[in-house]
Image (cartoon, rainbow, N blue to C red; front, side, top):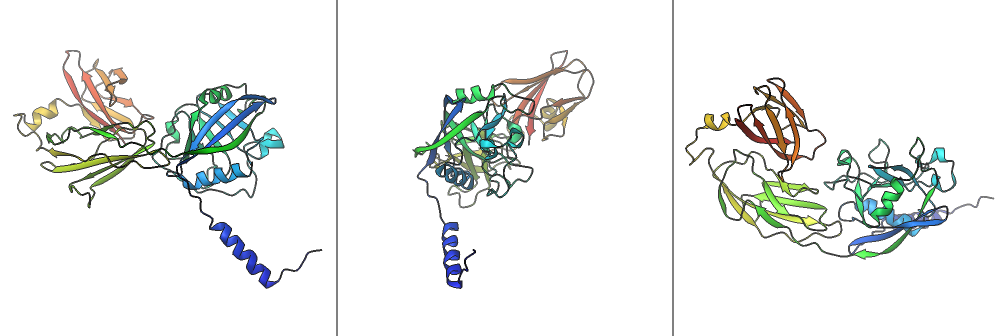
Length: 384
């Protein structure tokens, strides 16, 4: 028999549900979890992870609440792709037919996307979802290798702190044609504490503090040294030493530089950087200052002369494809990253040559074109 519910009872139930909905989670830092993995009731190993409430608070709360209900226990890492990811956390993988693993269950609470500048590097934990960006539920994946194609498309909310070798073991497990392990690999997840570490502020390096005559013809790069637990860096650039008015603010992932565009000449700039380790922000670095110079000033080189030393390239900036034109056949084109590492080389067969750098990290690269007569043209490429 269905009992009648009085209006007063309805009001009480509504009040309770409202209070539940308003529950807030307060973290002192990054919540830490142990993922115990088993195969055939034999322990494979323990993967320890920490989550990023400062970067993805909704996903952190969702994972935390599911662990508190022992939701993940006996679910499987149902998708394993070496060199890419291991994925798990589907309730279907407890007892359901393997053909349903990864499909999720109707009615699971969803979490809205929290895209950020955090990069999908090896060991990063991120939210699985369908084509709907706001469809994340309980499923997550751990990157077995860096996956730049996922950046800005999936919500990063944690990382492995130890046990990455067991991620390797799972990723390389024998699998079927649907990337399901041939033998079920179960997980048991337990909360183990909090990492309350506050990161140190980054150390600025380039341009040097109080640098003058910074040339804006070649694009200016602001560089700093990485912090060991830094996930996202925030860079503020301003013409105001108090930063009351900020000209540019950029959040980067693992990049340790930014390239401000269209900086006017004869202008004094101030810049600073702080980092976010997922649980806390560092204080800002000491403020550095630099002054830009007039194009071509003080060196006695005319504009036409400087441009002659550069190749004709279009489009630049681009998403990664650049066409070099008016290049002597047989010339060698080389491209170097910000650390001076050669990342691309080709020998031209035509006067116009297309190079493809798509998939590379966004940022500034240096090119060098060496002709058969050893004449050199060089300059910058910007991948946006």
